[in-house]
Image (cartoon, rainbow, N blue to C red; front, side):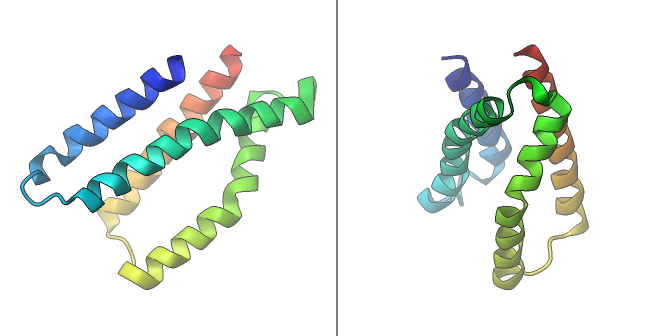
Length: 117
């Protein structure tokens, strides 16, 4: 239940960021925002539990985060190639925002979550 609450908070954040574009926002854009959050809300806990099941107590939180990051790199590489060929290189602002989100949510929040378990 706590995971659903966190996913709802993320969806609320996406909604707030998209508020300025509400007049031009299509259903397709809304789905492209919501579907990844829903998939991540299931995939992340499953990946975390699988890492804990396979590795047991041999790995600490930092090592599990590194393992999940390395294991997901092929997916991110393919996704970045798709983006490169369909829309081109991202702007400097988009790149900086992505790095900030990756560090804050992908690394810091994940480590805090895994250490609490």
